Each structure stands twice: as C-alpha cells, then as structure tokens.
Image 1 (tube, rainbow, N blue to C red):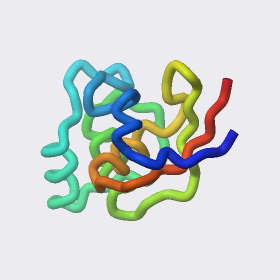
Image 2: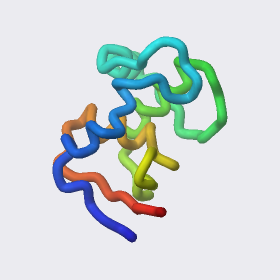
Image 3: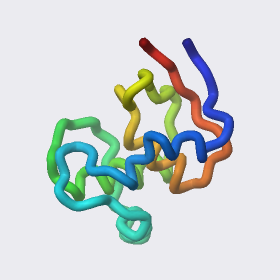
Image 4: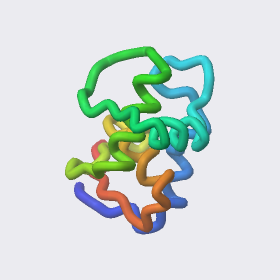
Amino acid sequence: MFALIENILQAELFNPFRGRQWGLTELITIKDIDQAIKEKKYRNKELWNLDRNYHIQRIAYFVKYGWENPIEIDKYCIVDGYHRLCAAIYRKDKTISAIYTE
C-alpha cells in the first residue's frame, strides 16, 4: 500500500536520529549532517558500510539532491529508507512518500 506520511512527526516512531541504525555505536546527529553539507561531502552510491561517515554523507546527499523512491515501512520497522527519512526530518519536510508492507 502506497501512502504519504502527512506529518513528518508521525515518522518520529521510526526516527533514525533517536536510534543506532546500521550497526553504529554512536548516534548520527543534525550537527553531523550540517558539517557534511558545509564540507560538501556527499555519498550517492548505496553500499552496505558500517562506517559512520558513509551514512552521514549519504544523508547529506539526499538532503542536497532529494530522491524519488518512497521509503518502505512495515508495522514494526523501516525496511528501506533510513537515509531518506533522516534527510526528510533534517529538511523538515511536511510529507514523505512511503510504502507500507505487511
């Protein structure tokens, strides 16, 4: 089922800034994203990488350039789209496209 999360605050349930995604031991913060954008450090290629800087730069890329694919959510977690959700929260988007799966 395709839907728009109409209020990004609804996404707080899955807010990646409040948890440790990608196996990281240290949280990624808004300041981290600010710094990557300031330094123009963007990562546009999807890799499975446990390096914290990779994830910061991936979020910064989506903040700067946007995305077309919706995030994918099931009733318990985000299946795909943590970087995009971080970017939407950072940009204070009012909506984000999502696909709900069960």
